[in-house]
Image (cartoon, rainbow, N blue to C red; front, side, top):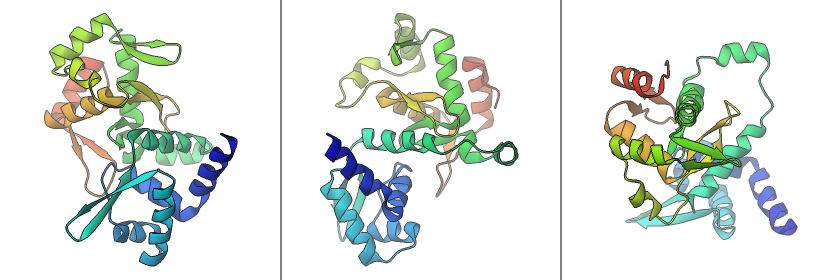
Length: 225
């Protein structure tokens, strides 16, 4: 186990590979060329780095026509990368003031679920209302929550059948508190986008909150945007 951890840590410690993993948190699949541009390196060098990440089981590749697309091999890898960012030292008071209105820190996607200040506020509201419960640092849906999610249009039984984690806390790197991950967190984000509460931003993980979203977030969760 120790040797395996050292191997993974060494892989992620390389600046180019770190950029690849951070870029993939966008939730989309990228070509090697796109990742090379993001990391400011040559396609040949990127190919070498991608091979190492594939061999380690951190990434998978899908071929469509003439192109190959790279993504995380599983969602848990994405959650681990996001959690690693929480190790970044807290900003100074001057830097905090400058970053206060940063769109990426205010509301963003963390792979396939909502993160940032709004994502954390959503989790806190669901906990305060007893819709989800924090039991020994694990999140669970309460009996009250089962009805709430059903009324909201999310079918929990269908989510539990998926071959992935149903619900888990995910440490938010900018807020240093938990937001909601797992298939339930993903479904919440999808529902808010479908209902036009939120809109994704092109080429960014930042998420825009619509006027309708502001009203609904306050009505259901008492979140002031």
